[in-house]
Image (cartoon, rainbow, N blue to C red; front, side, top):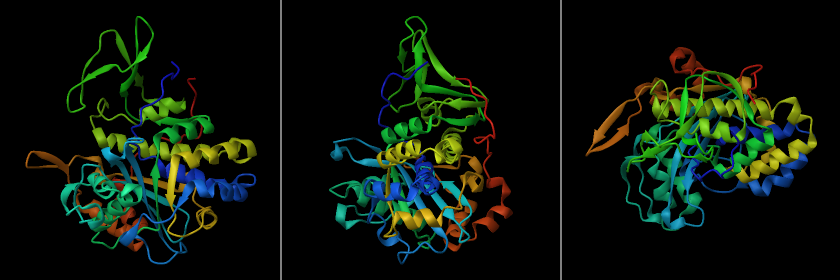
Length: 385
């Protein structure tokens, strides 16, 4: 089945980390440094971190990044934007590893007041922080700044960020296409509620009915959903992005935690593909990939040049990436005034503190149960296409 329709603008992916690593891998492409200079204006932005920014324009020591996927309506700024995916990424001072921790979008958080956008502060789901900073003219910079402050406060204000990035879904589709798809291993049966086809007409369409809360209910007549079975395979761009979007029909019933795990796995798979010989040694392919990065990612560099970022993180590769399970992948819900929140357990809060003190390696060694199942980057994934 080929993807004919344009994907909707949903940007609910924690994929920006992958695009960021693709960007950095440009340093090893033929002419990579010149390419980075060429695309720098498309990718790099100033500001956006405010009080949560690390002091000084340097990335010589440990590095913390805030990676955000947003649900933004194009040309409809009055509708606002929420952060549907939030990842904190940490690179130790040795610059040879990268740790990824997803923060559930429904996490209960104290969001600081923001006079610039007339927000008085309060307790809400953490994804609302971006909206409260975005509203009333704050835009992306304001949304990112308030979200960064909110995430920092989860660690008592000690967690500061050396950089941040925002993903655009439409751009990601082009990026994965430029890479020629990715190889991944499905770790649980996943049924798509967004993509399927009519068994009689063969026309593509949405296979499920949805209730007012956006929860899929029954299958539509004659509709067959796309199903991703357990096992390793090659994913075309539309398949990979559809797969990591799912949270409602997962075999393990792990919802957002399953989706977070699959998104983190995809980040690693995409980074591995970007650093493969077929991309690194091909200047035409390299130029195409970097061109798509500019469409997919807005990177806030905290006044450090992209060349310096590339040089500093050139030792990070997919084998040095570790994905971590927030709350050990288990729901920890709390209902307040009829609204359901996720609550970070003490281990998750302690991990954020370890990010701020560059003790993540030791912390993870003492909590091996937090390491996610790495099923996404097989040495050789058999293709079904």
